[in-house]
Length: 199
Length: 199
Image (tube, rainbow over all chains, first blue to last red; front, side):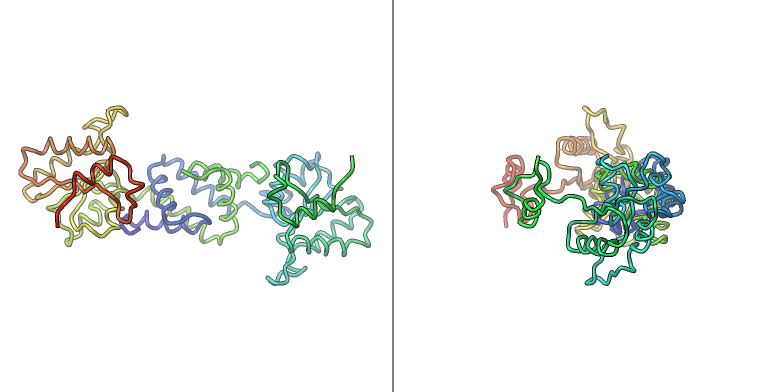
């Protein structure tokens, strides 16, 4: 990389710290930025700085936000009586993209994982239990991942909320739409059979 | 993408303008930057701006540089009597990485391509001919690409320099090292046979 002048080498180094960006890609990106309009580079740099200064967590649901309340929590069209619990903002974004939910969210910031030293105090469970205990709350939809940690987190939440008069549900697991049965793993197939429903 | 607050959406938009970075990758990078240390993001933004302000072209060879003379042209260990002609800085970087050349370079900034409207006046040929005519210049190595445009550019240079007492050479074409003959294209094979050498 030291076949380029220092400013290019430095940018290549900085870019290659990003996930999935190796030295080769960083070199290509840096040379692109070098030849791109000054305005584009200035905007990119400003956007990076702006992101770090202006993004915070929603005080209610802990989603990424640029205000005290996120776009969803402050939207009167969203139903605050239904709370969908997810592990992180990307899971929330995936549900939002599906346009299948009009309630609000609660972002845990992870899942229980004793092996990795993540206990109930390390994710936002207390905050969830407080929201679940509010009079307005009618349903908690648990949309943690369907792996071991996500299932353990779901069980923990169900156990802790059993005294509270709130409906608790779990998003469905099964064969993905368009999925070929031949390539489905055993666990998913077992779940799909177990959760089969009538017409 | 509008499931994220504005600063994230803006950065995703800026990042997805980079080559090979789609919406999905831009989203992943933006979220990485969001969670990366403030210092890293600040350095990345500063490097982008610094690149645009401090990189210019070497006055002698037109390589990317942060000074009037690039690292190579100002290095007394490099032989200025041998000039390697390349199309662009990445080609030069490829040769430098190979550690096989101790002379200097001349970056044309492209190759002749009448179809794309690139004529002799559009790349740095006049500057090359001036350098070739200097007393100190002994050899011009033409390392343009081995495609139609690169070969045409090489022929043009050879033709224009035939009156000047300078040795003109072309980098060798042939089977790549470790290349399986079975998968070599016909043109490369023809070139490899034509340019065969004795021991």
